[in-house]
Length: 165
Length: 195
Image (cartoon, rainbow over all chains, first blue to last red; front, side, top):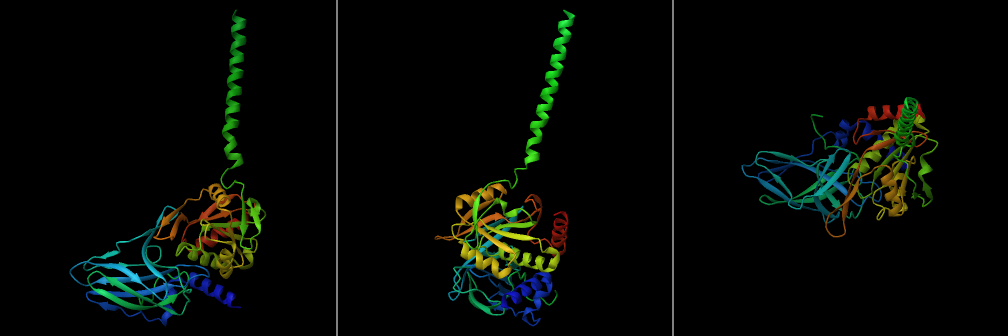
């Protein structure tokens, strides 16, 4: 019963990718401001059973005049956070850890999204369940640390809610 | 004298002709036996049952390589496969799918079973002895490589296309990562029509 529901849900999400944004009552998640940075459009993807890793995604806009750097993402309740970059080279999926973090240039927005830059939570203590939320703390070189609570969307969710979608 | 010369000329012509024929036959060999996907290996399904290269016989198949520690491509592709099966409905009854791990050291049959069964009962999880899995990856020309992530942890770079096989287990084409649903389902309909 639950399996059937899950499958139907997965199918519905994949078949209507743009509309998965409606998950959070159609409201765009609010931006969180820390110093000159705005963190917005954050979400996590639900994980499959036994998947020991989960992906967390968000966008960072630097409204200041100097660059900053995302140096770490921690989530002690979830597991160990690492910053990674995924890329497709031909038909090969490549994953690279980014131990130096990600630079957020002045006046620009850097987006962490599926199939690109992302935060991977390793050694998950519990699966990410769609409809629930996860807590992560982002630490920036200049702006400092900020705690976020992000919604868990579908297994194949591509982005958080966007009013313009 | 002239007679002998003529005779040798004919011998030469015959030899040349024979060489050309043998050459042509030798050159044809690789095409007729299609080595792609043609390996021999003994692996395990998610119930721990032995299966081998004959798993692809008698029905069209989707074949995908990945691993359960995979954060993005694999769950996405699993979810998409479930959606394609849903879209095809009864039309896709004959179609099977296989999720083969490129990380047999960590992916036991039980782990593979929970992973694929939750998504769809139409997907068989394949793991086994790393040596045998390596043979299977080689047979299908799959690239895979460990990427250290600190400590004992690692990710795997790997080929991420879905291979389409006809009911003889022969390669017919691919569905690319994140190919749109209509195109993917169209390719599956073609595959089903041929099989």
